[in-house]
Amino acid sequence: MQSMTASIGAQAKILTRRFGPVGEIILNNPARHNAISLDMWERLAEVLAEAADDGGVRVLIVSGAGDKAFAADADIMPFAGGGLETIRSYNTLADRVSEALYNFPKPTIAKVNGACVGGGLNLAVCCDMRIASSEAVFSIPAAKLGLGYSFGGVKRLAEVVGLPVALELFFTARRVSPEEALRIGLVNRVVPGIDIDDVVAHTARIICENAPLTIAGIKAIARELGKPASARDLAKLEHFVEVCFSSHDFAEGRRAFMERRKPDFNGT
Image (tube, rainbow, N blue to C red):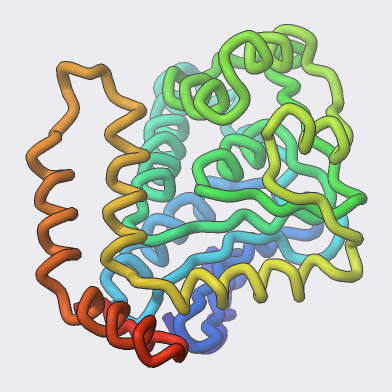
C-alpha cells in the first residue's frame, strides 16, 4: 500500500495510507456520507488484495473520511431502476468484497466516527474489531426501505451480537447509540471523537508488536468457528499451531522473556 492514493473516479473515493506496518483504507465519499458506490466496491476489492499480499502490513484499519460518517449505507440508488439483474450484479460484488474483508488474513479494525448505517454497518462487522467515537450511531434500515439483505450480512452481525439481538436490529430498523452498541457487543470500545484516531492507532501498534504467526492462527480459528462443525478444517488449524512452535518468533519470544526485554517478532 502506498503512503496515500488519490486520483480520479474510484481511486479518489477509496484512499489508502500506510504508517509502518499499519495500513488504512478510507471510504472517501463525503458528499454522500461515504455511501459505498459500485465503483468503490470495485476499488475496495483491489486495495484489499494488495494489502493482503503486502507482507509489510500487519494490521488494517478501515475508516470513513471526515467525522460525520463511517459509511451511511451502500449506494444502490443509481441502480434501483435497472431491474433485478442490475441489483443482483451490485449485490454479488458487494458480497464478494465483504467476504474478502471478513476473511482478510490479518487483524482488521473498523474506526467508526459518525453514522454507520446499513451497508456501512455490514462492512464494519466484517472487521475483527470496531472502535467507535461517542458521536457514532448505528442502524440497519433495510426493513424501512423494503430492501433484501444477504445471508452473509445477517450471519456476520449475528456472530457479533448474537442472533436475537441481530433480529431485533433488523426487524425494528431502530437507531443504536454508541453506549448501547458497547453494551450489546457491537463495538469493542467507545472513545471521545477527539481521541479516536490516537486510540485506534495505539491499538494497531500494540497488535503489530505481537507475534504475527500467533495472530494469524487465532484469526483462522475465529473464521472456522463461523462454519458448521462438519466443514471446519481442523488440520489447517493444527498446522498453524505447529508453524508457531517451530518458528523464529517462538524462539525470540522465549529469549525476550528470559532477558526481560520486548521481543522483536518478524513473522517467521
